[in-house]
Length: 302
Image (tube, rainbow, N blue to C red; front, top):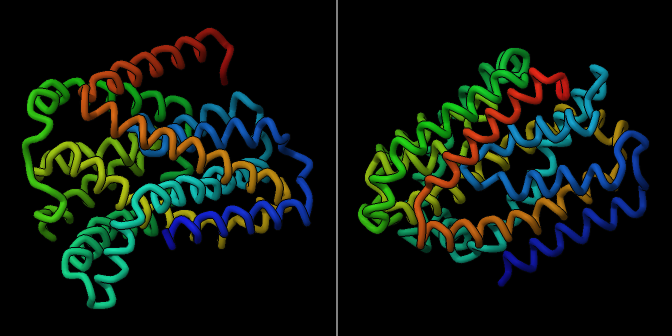
């Protein structure tokens, strides 16, 4: 309950600040809503939020100039705050348990917190060391499209086996530090835009022996730390330029719509995977990759 109150307070503060400071001139409210919904719906599904946001922002004509590109990239990371708040809203007991564990009052929560931090470390190291290199070489329509296609094929390659025995595997409380580190190393593959952090962490969790449900939940919890660190880093680095370009209203709208759509997406995904397999995400990724390639070849998208 406390975490949900804090979540509501953060959203209200963001909206209040936006109302006081006004909007920027280079992003419409409709564009802010479109990007927020895109972030929320795709962040925790194994379809790549980064790839979708890159595609949608280019379709909307954002980030054409070098200054606009930097501000847009920062905006796309800043609105991840909405997705972070969604997990806080949906899993308050897990987060509270981890917080109590760090205070020495919950042994199971301490174990989950240690495993989450362990899984986060490889991404932190790779991100700090090669972040700029990744941005300059892999943020393009063809690298993203290739990642969508490869990820779709990977899902289909393992989905049938997972779907036949979705309940088999360890619970989240049985995850070891070594297994968490393996998941973290696999998560670094998602540095390639279009791969999907959610996809590789879920598959990584299944690979080390977690049940599908436990792997999905650990992916959500790990996302709190990974997305939170990336968001804070980008806001400190590019935040002033983003506010100068877009103002305060557009980011606030993006955060709110990302929160609402992420809550809906997470609830749908958990319910869907309890009854079905991962195949639908594989077929979607392959269709999206082929459709994007056709649009590029047809001259509709550059």
